[in-house]
Length: 237
Image (tube, rainbow, N blue to C red; front, top):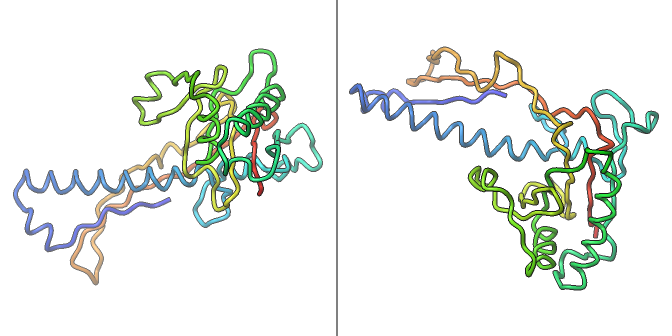
């Protein structure tokens, strides 16, 4: 993935003083990296079908448990299938009542049990909007909030057993179906090339434009070493 910080010749001349130039460069770089972070958040939930897009959670955790992930076809190699469960009822998440919340909690409990193996268990659950609202409705009187470190990182969420529960608008990537990912982060990694970790390249000057371009490069992917300990709950309605 390439990210470009561009300054026109006019901007450079208007900010030609030492400190003005430092502020200009710092502002443009910070804005570019914020854009990259937002785009990467979308990619983390993607199925990897777009150009220059990592294979995200929609690729690793599929709603039928199968798919070819990391070159392994789970239709043939069943050990490589992720866990999945369709929420009980029809369009359950659209009506966050106490009764529906209790039904959804039962689905969560069932999913949790399939993902426990000795000391291994999910440590992060990420819900789309309606699933998070439904879970919050059921926990309103019993709320336990996630630890301070996660809150300081910009996430606001709850707890389910030992897992942090967060809301992310990108969870149901490119679909209207509600989704919830039960993740064991011990087996999920973002691998980066050592020479492309939003690494800054040399300044470029186009031959047909009064501007300067500074490229930043990133290369890597989201990888999973054990799909059987990852799960997805979904409401297809």
